[in-house]
Image (cartoon, rainbow, N blue to C red; front, side, top):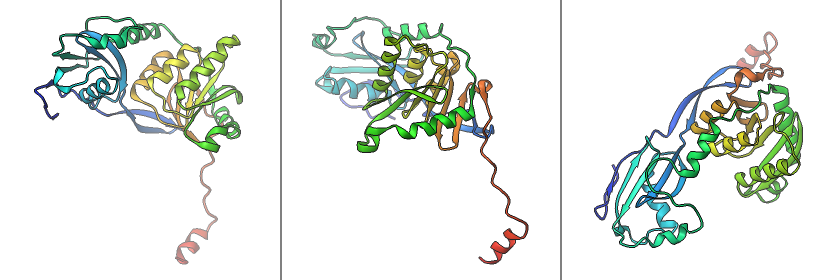
Length: 292
């Protein structure tokens, strides 16, 4: 249970941290996989919409308090009356004892709404995404291996200094553009800008990222019209859900000869399965055991 301080009324509305799905590995074998949870949570402060955060959902009340503190919206904990989380509307309502809403100055450059429910911007984006389906593109296992091999020539900043993420736009095994930045979302946006500036269609493209396959990553490639998303890292539950919805073929934990197909298995062609370990010549196994 969450400790109560200063008579703040708080729910205890944590969600499960992990969710189970079925994936296919590089040999086409089914594997059980755990994905980290990811949910949208819109913070309302005295009915004013502040921000929509993506969270694992384990400690939404503490996340809300910390955000309001770190962003300077509330100075004293004593000013907070209640923190109430409602996962049905994906919102947290914070009520205060403030007589003046000085925090509104921080929202001067954005639209302020009142009420409850999903964040205005986030809600509109989700409604738009329900109508988007990326092109149906078959992807070959051999192409995935070729892309991973070609990417070894990149990651220059990471090799020299670390602390960055890399993203690539690929057509087949060809790397059209590779971008590194301190945040993976910056790298994605830079590639989106490149595609926009050069009128590049994403229908036959594959997108690679070193970062996690979160909902925001899936949203971005969906808006770019790219049907295949590949990462050396893992995925979240909501990212998986959105990829399924939009028809994105999503592969995670891609490194060397290994990967997991999380969505779009019906569009994936296994044409380069890794060779099974060879059996030792007759008599060799018994000889090796005898020498132990």
